[in-house]
Length: 435
Image (cartoon, rainbow, N blue to C red; front, side, top):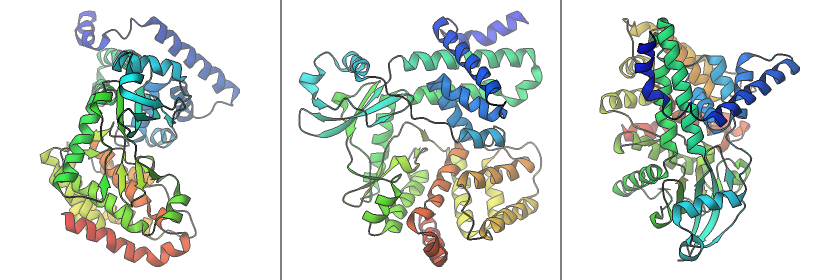
């Protein structure tokens, strides 16, 4: 058994378990969480786990966000709790971030490349911080700088988790059916890819080419400045406008919110079949309404790719959700998902119709539920019928539901009920045009 474990673990161990300092930090964070669990009245396990993840930093915050976006893999209580997992962290002082710039761009970066860098970050997340700057050639840019030693921390943590999962699967064979090690391996690849800013720059340019090839002038991506970028530094054109998170300003300064968001939605849907990747994290914080009325797609660190085999199922599912064809919806879910038993399409279609009917018959006076709750219900129904979705598909469906949730931005509650039918027809027309 020991030899078996060694053979399975040697690739997973890497240099992760050799980082004693990080393991000590992890142990201390878990200890603090345990003490707070006792002092705070022993809250539920998902709450304690989320708090521990936030305390443990970059790796675990990313894992928490992946849990939140993977309802087909993790229990509902954990998915809902980890939707609160914060990615805004205390900023690292600029003096430390300067060292990263010097290592990546050379000691003369402030002489040869940048005219000025504002040392106060525009944003500070678990992996990187973003700063406003100006190039020597006069362009206003933003610089995304990776936090010092974050890649080392991520690799150590993820290798250690993969190590533990592999040991468990060897010692407890029945856990192999849950494929914990496989899931962690996939997560490891996803998170480490997000740390490669060269890859993110490629993602931006692939999507930019898609916009150009389709003559799309409604949506824009930031230009990448390669001479001021590297694997840990990404310098991009600064887009000026209103972030969709500022709902009040968006409504007060946008003449036709429906048209603006419609253009964003139409572009995203078109990318599912017309581009080799789609933006997999297009929440309100990554949508910017520019001063000229165009929509900016930003932050391409997380993208998804749909195989040709599943593209037809995805298209059919999205279209069927808009026209409420529950039989096609059920058939599409079966095409996309994985199952080891025969599925009764008629029964699945009936259950889906019940869910949609319940959501449409909600009391208008009651606040509309989060799209994640609707997603959880769809995934739950699929699992009842023996269908399990791949994680990338749940990311896609969640993004689709992000757009669906923007209805409360476009209308206040009184107007929303009056315009609901027109709004539905508008989105249906977009889907029909694409597919």
